[in-house]
Length: 214
Length: 214
DNA sequence: AATGATTGGATAGTGGCACTCTCCACACGG
DNA sequence: CCGTGTGGAGAGTGCCACTATCCAATCATT
Image (cartoon, rainbow over all chains, first blue to last red; front, side, top):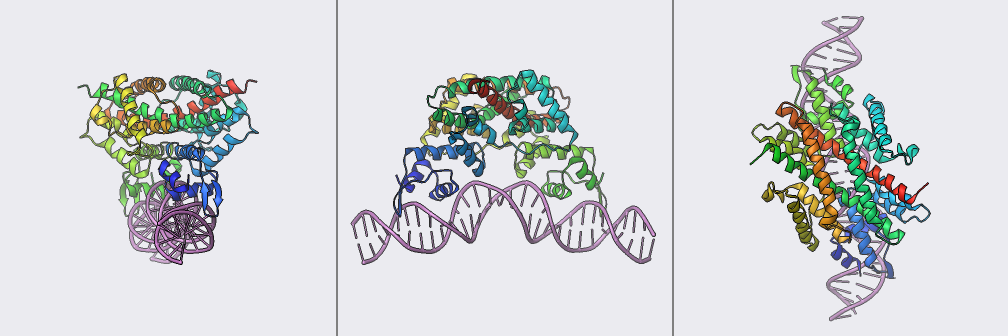
């Protein structure tokens, strides 16, 4: 298929597809002549994945490129490739290293993770964006005087753990490593808005039940 | 305290505080003379909340203003004021109304919510950003051929529901409606990164357990 | 008083980013 | 053989969260 058809089938403008090609998010089509290139179904699929990463996952374009590169890098272990998307997901501001809440938040986070027995990569853990995101969120809660102790956090961690098991089960239904990687990237990113939107709907539901009893 | 002190205590530059004042995110200080204004502890607190909404909650400045306005609007019901932040949280792109997956995603979402008995505001539900976010996420999953049926989504909804109950319990520990509103805004926004980061850490943990068994 | 620094306020500018517009040479189709 | 369409490349656009610059008033110090 030509660029125009790729555009029509994906709902992405040709200008934007050209931009993604330039940025290396999409492999070039097969050049037929100087002015014609052929794109296949896998381009369409890749383009949809890219859109999902960028629009639904709110990932910067440069980051999406890194994720896709890591996912394709066969020299990395399956574990690292699976984690590529998680590592690159947007994660907000870095912790204020000079704030006193940050140090306490870090202790809180470590206590929580230790208690859960999430010892895997304990050394590397503090480098992870997700860890820093957790620390900053806890520090923000602390600054505003809201609860952020292990007791309040544990339910979240327990649920997160359940979800991870469930998600990896889904990933393992795919046969080839390549499919598993792509599934992991897609599910990590796409189930995030599912989870957030359901939480928000549940809050509305519960708040209505308590404060707006009809 | 003066603007400079407010800046120092909050870690936000004076230029940015002035910007927030201009944008109406922060009430003006008490003007003492033509060149002096006095800010109180409540300004500091409000500023920290604003920062949390914008930086941690990734909310646009204009949106944060709306949230805070709604939270203060005493003509609204407690239920609506509690929901202000949820309503305004960033929620990604609007569903492609002309895509066929969207219609099916909408059915899927309705089936799920009906099954959960989340009937509250069923009519208004489709207007809610969270609902549209859910539909778009399901449609994206469908486009990429990943599972998005009620069976897969139910666990997420169940967990979301647990969290909502837990969060509303915390909100109800505050005495005055004003405190409850602020707590609701802050907890909605700040527990979101907590949940996401824990999910990502749990994934890393679980993926390591399965694929990188040491 | 004189004076240099500081304050709050207004305005214009900056930088990052995701596109998007404009050209261009080429080539296919009638 | 010519109008339309194609893919490629570079510059431009629009948005947005700040941020830098001015300015007049006023405070702190001499």
